[in-house]
Structures are given as C-alpha cells and as structure tokens.
Length: 271
Image (cartoon, rainbow, N blue to C red; front, side, top):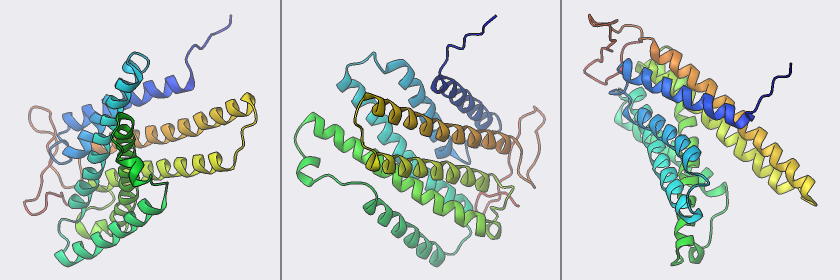
C-alpha cells in the first residue's frame, strides 16, 4: 500500500506555525503574562492574523485590494515590532541610571541607523512621493521593510545587552524578559541571514531559461522554510519558558491560575 502525502512543506510549516502561535497565545493569556508583555503579545496576535489572512485572502481579492490589505498589516506589524523592542529594553533595564540609558540608547540607535541606511536601496524622492496608488503602495512596502530591518537590528543589540548585563538588572537567565529577548534576537538573526543570503543569490545568479528560474525559486522556498523552522523552534522555546513561573514568584493561586509577583520599583521579578 502506498501512502500519498498531499501536503507541501510550506503547507505543513504554515499549519505548525499557526498552531504554535495559538498555543503561545493561550500560555500568555492563561499564565497571566499579557499584562507584563502587552506589545509582545500584540506582535504574536498580529502574526497569527497575517498568517490567517494569507491563507484566506490570497487569490480571492483583486490584486490592488490585496496589496493594500497586506501592506497595511505589514506596516502595523512593523510598528508593533519596534514597540516590542522598547518593551523588552524597559523591562530588562528599568533600574539602570538615566545617563546609562541615554548613552546606550544613542549607541544602539546609531548602529541601527547606519545599517538601515546602508542596507538595501532607497528609491528617489520623485518615485517615493509620486501621486498615484502604486506609489502609495510602494511607500507602504518601503516603510514595512525598513521598519522591520530596524527592529531586527535593534532587538539583536538589546538581546546581547540583556544576555551580558541583564543579571545585574534583574533580567537574568531564568527571567522571562531575557528568554523573550533571546528568542526575538534569534529570530531576527535568522531574518537578516535569510535576507542577506537571498540578496547575494539574486545578485550573483543569472537566469538563462525556465529551468534556471525554477531552480532559483526552489532554493528561495528552501531558505524561507528554514527560517520558518527556526521561528518554530523559537516559539516552542517561548511556550516552555513562559509556562513556567520565574524564580521568586508566587505559584498557582487557589483557583489554579498562576500570577507573577511584580516588585513595585521596576516590574521585574527577582532573579
């Protein structure tokens, strides 16, 4: 008897990703993590909505309408990603002095600005601000791409700071803040690696015929699938870490729900 597997790798990964997001949201809600990490939770909700919209709407809406919907969601997701960076940094280093905050923030933003400016093309002002629907959609796309790039660069830097200095500010290894930061940084490293690899392939590959084109597209799918697998691992990490209470917090209350004890000074539980 032959078993026929009618699902592609992309379909399987989509299903696993969406299921993992739902489980992660259940953990965030059920274990009372939302009040401490509202923007992180919002980013997960936004990702789930985008995945669902991609499955339900692609091919069923006119091309222009679909572009407006998905680019609007991408812009909103990019803004939320930047707010997540601020949330993680605030949670990790709320006890740091004002001078340290200002100096480190300026350094992190400077690195992000340099990467943002040097990586990827910038359209001309005439093209960017042309009075047409297509130009408007291009501007939305540019905003989401650059904001995502900036968020990735910033969270990697914040993640490194949390790993090396978080323990001194009550964001040690077993804290949820550091665990979220490590996951976000890992996912961002994967995103930037995929972007760099694909740009290198697109720059140095010459397509002569349809066979070459299909080979390149197949390679692109494999690269993107590998990035999806990495994000799946990150979500499993978050599910496991956020399910457990941090050291020094109260366990389950009488009704069986878990509540975290937050110190009054900075909202972080003790390491």
